[in-house]
Length: 305
Image (tube, rainbow, N blue to C red; front, side):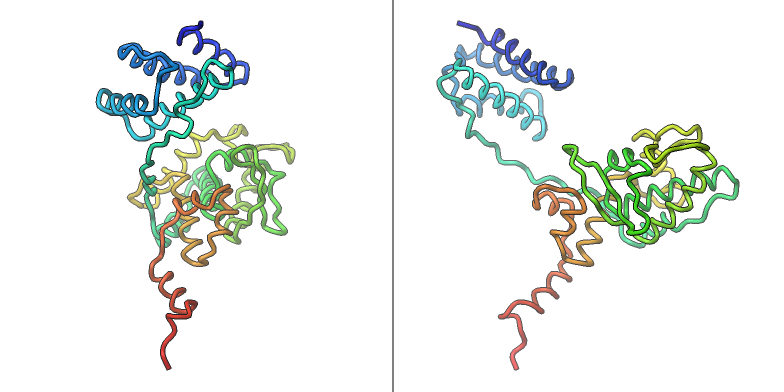
């Protein structure tokens, strides 16, 4: 009969073969070692663990380590995956955590900036020096695309020249799970991209359609950290007192689009969300707009004649 640590080693080996990252494997090992230590102190065999024991363990972890809700969910996920494997491999007759669930706290909404503030950032004047102007034209194209199309940082960083369709103002994006979607970009973003590509030719010289869309002065692709820093820099230059980052512009895109259109499904498609509930988290409800829609559409909200 294998002990818990031997089973854990076998499971981790299988995960390694499945190309799990070293960081993830280390997290699994820490989480499950902590759980096994807890069981050992209470003289619990793996076969004896019940949902009540798991609930006690998680409460213990919160009390001892002051873990956040997300950390507790990660611990639970590690245990659940291990137990599922142990059952499938016939080391367990039943999985005590199969239907075990914690009530999730609602995810906090990211910060929000209004449309006028976004305009203040995007419509600021270029610096007077030539290099500053060139950097601004690149950064403006980045900002415009983030806000115009609601891109994730990784999606923007991974764009290539071939992904742009100027005639139809469409953008091909590879998102989470290597899923590809096509989304529109606006006239302001189009003009900013045209202005940036004029600088691009000066910086890159020869290039192909497979080259990255956003590059540094030496022609190399911008890193995610460089993009984040440039976004923050341009917000500061515009005199805006906000910690601007790419995801905040994505959130503004979703909120402003929903407020103006009320079309949650279309916003979901453009953001690349597989579930509508995810899109709802990234949007604020415009109650005035909601009331207008209700008054206009609901049969019992019509004025009595």
